[in-house]
Length: 313
Image (cartoon, rainbow, N blue to C red; front, side, top):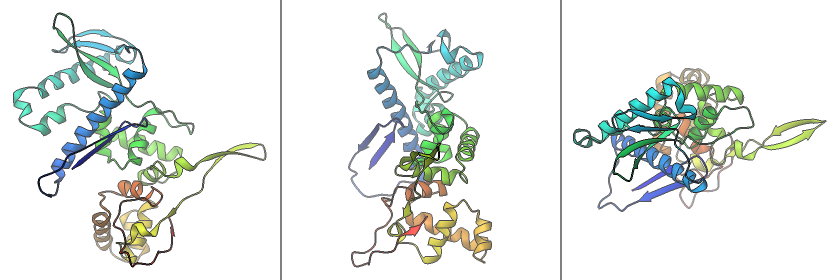
């Protein structure tokens, strides 16, 4: 079993362990491990920032009961202080014996970041007294195309195939806030929605292939749209491949059904089959998978199969 996590700042962590027997991981267990991965990613990002800076000062210092001793920077506002106090209280509840017996309840109390900004860390003084300090720890991501920091963070997570709920947990913000950030980012980049945004920000997506040019005295950003390697879709039927292209364009189930002169129920069945064959659960994950320049880990064709043609995405 392997667990992979990313910091969104160019670093990552992979842990694996052999299992005594082969087994399927259910959705509940999968969600639990994804949440743990979010904490590992945040911890690794903070550890690296500590190594790159000399004793970075925390934004806030609190007692285990939630009493605030110090606040600076973004933590000075009344709303931020309240977020931090509530987070400390939830964190302490998650550590009680009652909550420790229920891993999912404890994880629900302790999100990846606090209000999308802070990681809480225990600090012990020489007299043994414990304080909780809040360090700013959201990924530092600027963007020359005009994306705000949160929009770029959400876009990067989408490019890694994360769902909106997974992103919300990792950043410690609401699902609606994630959805709104994705919509704004897609609109700014002239993309059709979250699926196209995920494809754009995939590991080898168009974002990595842009070049700045000067044409007739004007500076332009240009890029070549990659070709989708049909070998990634070898497990799909011809009809399913056509549905995949419609999904990547952002078409709704109803629109796909109308174009293909079939029923929405038939399209829904085809989409379910596509997701199962490619090992994804949403069109965002599908776009991220197929946006990796043909390196997707979909089923591979038999050795005797001829090399298929390349299909434009």
